[in-house]
Image (tube, rainbow, N blue to C red; front, side, top):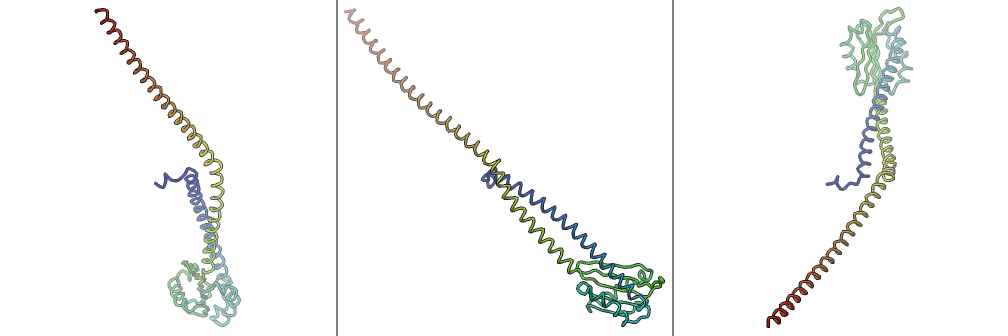
Length: 258
């Protein structure tokens, strides 16, 4: 019922807008996905690089198991990445804590992760774990002579990355909405100019032609009715005249017989 009420221009505009919205949505999702992957990759590289630098810096102090010196060595790094760094912990070769800095609620979790991956770390293999809100890095600390000095466990916050992704989604949605609004105005103008108006003019022309044909047919029918009435009157007159002639003939015949 609603489809029958919509004009050709409105239908065409709706179809174009629906496909445009789908295309823009797919394009926006693709761009957001690509940007998000790039941002995640950059975050992972930056956090891994900074964690590696911290591990190299504290290697001699950690080898001596001097937590005070370790704290001095990482103080500048922690101050630089204070907003992103959730927890930093340094351990000796046996997995015993030497230094700790950051949120206390993550301390137990880091200890458990270190103990669970101690064999891999002792073999020189770094361990990384990711979730939605944070990134966890476990690295072996190696001295310049490739001698193991201990391990570090660092938890990095993804809060800024999450805010960046949300802002990206909002920006993409706003741009998509603005593009659809502008495109709607342009599409409506062109559809009205090149589709609706010519079709309407042709329909009106056809309607006028149909009306003229209907008027001519009506006038012809009226004339035909009038001619039919005249023919009926003529036929009636002829019948009357024939009757009169017949009567006169009968009277003449009767007079002749007398």
